[in-house]
Image (spheres, rainbow, N blue to C red):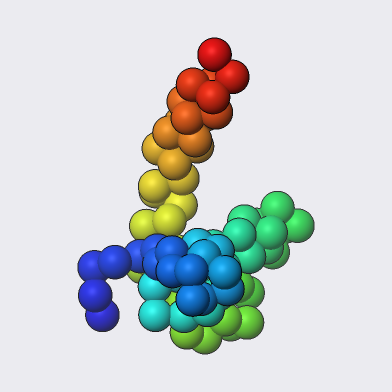
Length: 77
């Protein structure tokens, strides 16, 4: 498997961020977790996604949120 975790391609779901090598939106993972479902349930439902991809996305999420917040703040200044 490649080291890439997230793919953003305008030809795949209109550029929605997906797990690399799949058409599974990253948002689906957070939707599952938000409703109390486990990572294992997510992985069972989306067999193309690997556990190491999920772990990396979760590890990256604080930085992604911080970066997104900075970008939004710049746009409002």
